[in-house]
Length: 119
Length: 111
Image 1: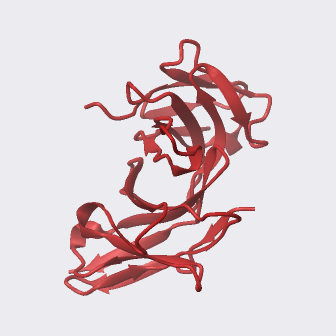
Image 2: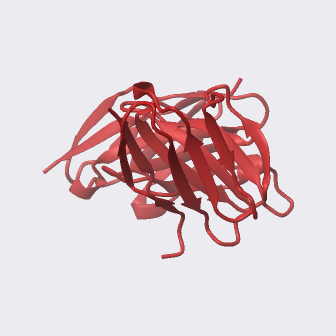
């Protein structure tokens, strides 16, 4: 399978613990995105990388959240001191920078998501 | 600001009948519009996108969408629904580096 992969698929943790999620994008894709989806809502943007550079962060990404993409390949999303409100599906997507086209024309391909439950 | 709206939380269609899932948009500049589908406990799958050109866009699994500039709509359609089409459908539009999603429409295909 050469699609976007995410690990783990499910995570249950206690409030106050730290958690880390991993995303492996499609191999040739240079842009990587993180979204959060709560029940009954569409995904909401958290942050994105172009290669190893983090270019945009949402106001949703509080200081307890940090994302990295150190070598421009896989990415990690860490949540420190988890709260019950962090319970959600965390989705990763990747896209390939279009030649001659703008970023808005690119198709983002999504992974299966990591479902987080904070007790 | 970019936004998309899906006016229906749920749509029920009998198997074999045509289906339509509605989306309206409000974007500045050229509209780029996407449809994604989400099956239970799965990530989002790309169905189709409108960038420019023909107003009727064909996508995966027999779906198509019609771009209507005067009505600022981008409705998803399929001529004959399958039970396996039952899922959550999202209309979306890019805003800068991110995609802005609608709230989603749950499609139920009744056997």
